[in-house]
Amino acid sequence: MNIPQELKYTKDHEWIRVEGDTVTIGITDFAQSELGDIVYVEVETVDETLDKEEVFGTVEAVKTVSDLYLPISGEIIEFNESLEDEPEKVNSDPYGEGWMIKVKFSDESQLEELLSADAYKEILGS
View 1: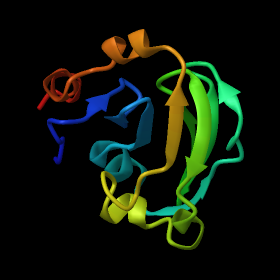
View 2: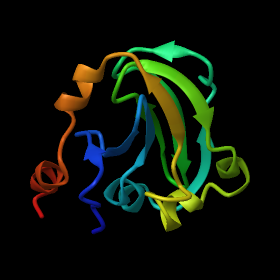
View 3: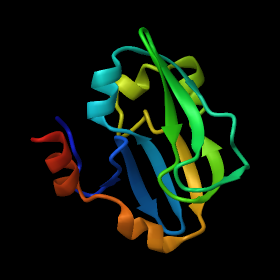
View 4: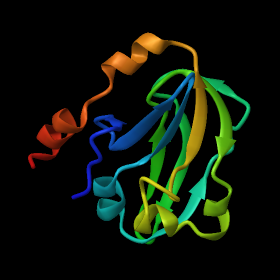
């Protein structure tokens, strides 16, 4: 299981890369393996400001559809449009080309509530 040390994580199996006053968000290697083959990623919240834990989109796999929850409050400034044609990037490269959104966050203190790689590993029991 790939869990990069430099990222932050949520109990909902999302990863967060902090870059100045923005974050890049995707789902973890564990999440994509549990979902199976991803066939569609939908995010219709670009340019919207959402609160932490609000649904920002959905990911559809062959057998299920899952909501995606925002791990930090802020404005969604970008969607990885390459996922419209190649949603399988989430399976093949969840921490790289499979990223989903970028968010300009509004409450830096929420970053402290995110999990470290080690704390996320504990949740997975690995």
